[in-house]
Image 1: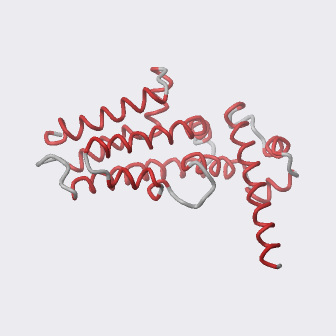
Image 2: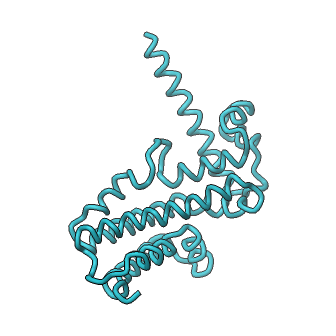
Image 3: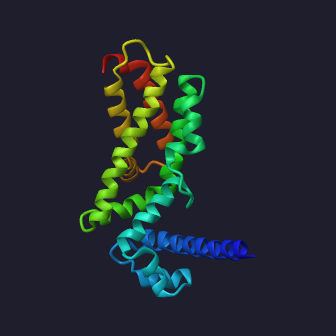
Amino acid sequence: MMSDVKGLRAARIAETEERILAAAHDLFVRDGYAATTLTAVADAARVAHRTVYVRFGTKAELLKRVIDVAIVGDTQDIDAPSRDWFQAALTAPTIEERIGLFADGSAALMARAGDVFAVGRQAEPVEQVIADAARAGRAATRDSLRRFFTQMRDDALLPAGADLDWLCDTAGVLAHADTYLLIRETLGWTTAQYRTWLGTTWLRLVTVDSAGG
């Protein structure tokens, strides 16, 4: 009986958090960082104002959580490299399949998180926690690409003489959220166009340019 009560309480807490995060996501994207308030988020989520303050503390922490959830697609404590799409990209049998799967996963991530990445960029100059999270995110992108291409090298899929450092650095910059936002804003590309460009460019880096980088 006690375990049932705890389970119901945990489910209610999780459901409340999801409502708050969904409301915050919509308000941040619609109104921008400066104009969004915790009170407005609470009202939109239909929870007490105190609930949002107790759960998240500050608007910056709430935005950070919204971005984190958008990156992986849910509230589970599983980072992107541990997700099925990333693991599939690490183990596919050919270069083309690995890069295709990684480009698919990266584009899907941007489709989910691109709008809140843009809000995060608004907040970076005034919120240290967001600036720190953005720096950590850029480092995580670089590390993920290094893991991806290092595995490809270890599986003897990279061309002989490929410059792994150059390949990881270049591919990592292409995969940054900043690059996606710049492409979206300056070229007006859809996520599908971004995915095609990313996959094509990564494949060229590996098969044409990596030995001479």
